[in-house]
Amino acid sequence: SFPTRRSSDLSALGALRAADEHHVFGIGIDSNQNSLFPGSVLTSVMVRVDNAVFRSLMAAKSNIWGNQMKIMGLQEEGVELAFDTYNQGLISPELKKDIDIITADIILKKTVLPHYSFTNECIYNGKRLF
Image (cartoon, rainbow, N blue to C red; front, top):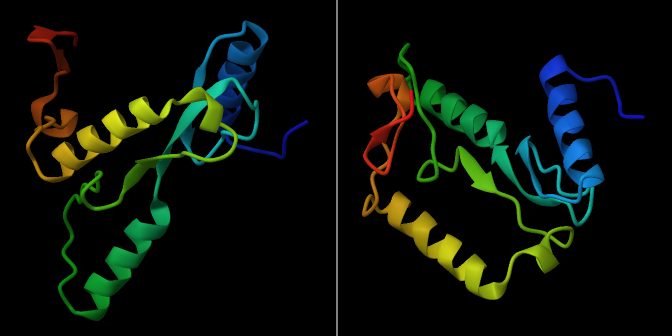
């Protein structure tokens, strides 16, 4: 039994449990969920609320806070993938190296990812998905 959570958290846990039961990989969301079903959670995409709060407090302290939408991606350390002992055997050193290179390319803007909030569409390989 898991602690009381929001319905979206429970949906994510249900999806990870189903992945585990069907012997396929799942990906955790929002926080590091790698330990929930060891061997079944490939990684977790963590939303780094701690970094968002810190940046907001520093902006307020510096009197540069503005009331506008702020987007924090990889470059701003707003999101990151979780790599730990629970998924270490699932991701080869070669794949981890590739992930690190892609992450660096996104941070350095060598690879530009459009943001849905601005484009209102999702394009993959030149095809509009929605």
